[in-house]
Image (tube, rainbow, N blue to C red):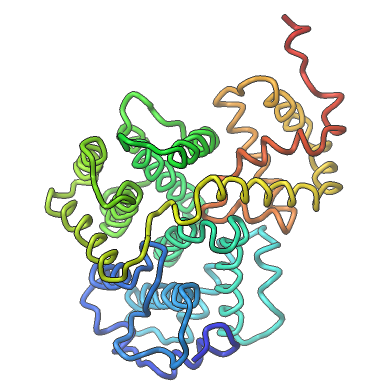
Length: 405
């Protein structure tokens, strides 16, 4: 089986029966533990879950990630509908991604002209992984985006029970996870220059996501009312990601451990749950000799920021005509973007900018990357560069604060 070639899903399902893919796992928690052991939760898949080899080929981390994402979605469906078939699961997963990508034409344009649902899903999953890699360039920060792919599985679970809640859920879940990882990173006592660059980017991003109470890092979570604390998978995932975020040097200092303890209490977990999360990460890292930081230092963060900036600039230039037209029609957004270049916007204004910019991104295919999990962290770069790259569009709308004072 070659996950990079057509018909791999059909071959995968022909090779493994439901017993191997679903029934051998005792529960959702058991399946999650196996996903974590494979590295999928950490964004570095080094194996697939079936006990037998899935391929005679030497597969890449991205190919293992694709297989594990599909397996996770498949398990979620059949765990919810034990009498369901593989074909029914595939149909449902395709519907889920179409619902998740509603209006995101750039994502859905890649969904091929074929009636075979398994082939459609193959293209969806390839596009899903490619879109996340495109945002942050290959091998630069695929770790952070791939670590966020488990959100697809959590969101699919919600889609199966209450489809109408999907959009709101995915937005809130992404914001919560990104903010939480940022707070975990900020808790580090010894920050190198790369830590500081990432903190600066996340602080900028967080103002366009959810406001953070800087007096008490853990208070932000109390406003995440969607997080019912009844879903153990959400809570485990959140704790594992935060453990990953602070443990890049394999040593937890006092402030890092204190943050994780606060989060553990908030999530209604025990001290043993926290110890297990730390142990799982340590065991995986030692077993596979992999640098699996959530924020990848083998390719320094300044390179991440630089490449991300270049990507955003290129997207703006390639869509200059369309962007200019959309901005001119938006009115208020044009004014606010112009003002953002000379003063700090209020929280209310930032919310307006975020909402209106994302609406524009929905209409421009190549900008739909900002709508995918992990993409909104780059939204401040879009706000920063639009007035600089499209200056003529803002000449009549720029506010001269000096003259007003």
